[in-house]
Length: 102
Image (tube, rainbow, N blue to C red; front, side, top):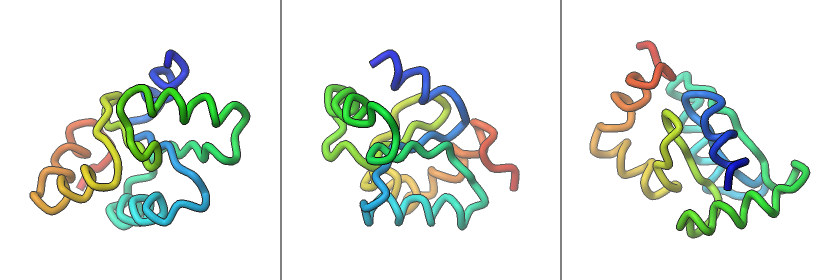
C-alpha cells in the first residue's frame, strides 16, 4: 500500500494501467487530448505489478485498472473519470493540481 501512495504522489496525475486494457487506453487518450501527461504505471510491464494491483484492489478499486489519482488523491477508475468529464468537473480538478494550464 505504501508503494501505491508513494507512486500516486509523484505527479499531479498518476494512472495505474495495463497495456492491454481498452478502458485504460480510452482514459489515456482523454488526458492526452487535454494536454495532460500523467505518470502511467503499466502493471503488466513493471516488476511487482501484481502486488500493486492487489493493493489497488484493497483500496476498493474494482476493476483494479485503470485507477487514477489526481493530486495524490484516489479518484477512481474509468467510470469516475468519465463522470467527472461529463459533468464538467474534470478540467477544473486538473487545473487545481497543476496538470493543465489552459
